[in-house]
Length: 114
Image (cartoon, rainbow, N blue to C red; front, side, top):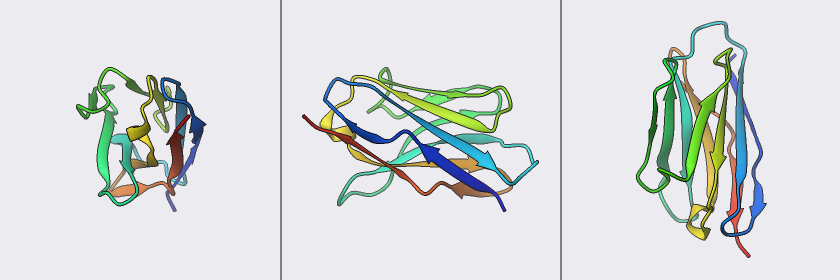
């Protein structure tokens, strides 16, 4: 069974940085893409960023220039480096991986507050 394990969330002050990780296990199939969504309290889940197995990265307009996604050489772990964090970045961040279908992580809380 394919599983995604996320880590790295926490509390950070505005302007600070944080790095999230997401590791895939339980499959030998190729992963076509990985990325992140987030969901703030009372809001719908929104797409944040995607990285393809080719290395191509895309970002939502709200995080472009502040967030950076990367993938390890084995293409089974993705990282999200978040910088210049704002209170409005506060949300539960969900990792996804596109194998034969989309698989989701359990979510990790990121809180940006002074």
